[in-house]
Amino acid sequence: MTESFFRFFQRAFVFGALVVGAAAPATAQDEPTADDDPSRRAATFRAVSGPDAERVPGGTLTVIAYAGAWVLILGYFWRVGRLHARTAEDLAALRKSIGEQRS
Image (cartoon, rainbow, N blue to C red; front, side, top):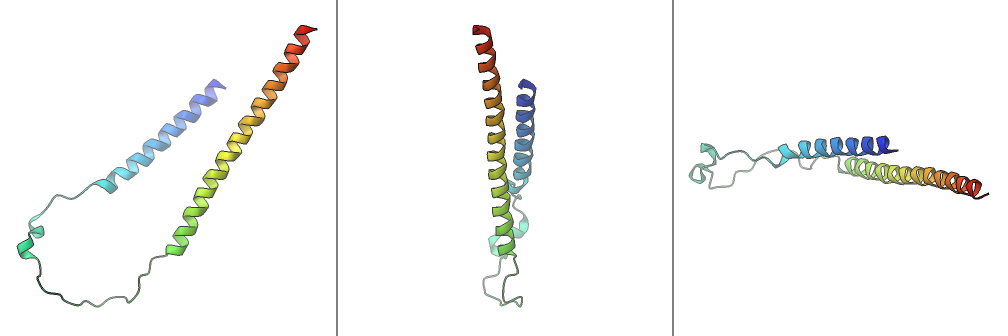
């Protein structure tokens, strides 16, 4: 049990490190350049041509996010149930062992 306990925390640590490592580039900001000088920016509005609507698959991404969240939640409950069943078996074996020692 101790080995699986440490293996679980080892995997959790690696997963956490990957999540933090993946999020680090998202927080980086570029250094200001000469093009960022406010005096060089346009002072008037110029219309541009482009698509009339956004083409982001928001519905699909939302469904995927919710499905992933539910998979994680159900996986957590499955694991807790498995651990509970294992603990119940150990407790039953312990009670049986104590009952045999008393007789």
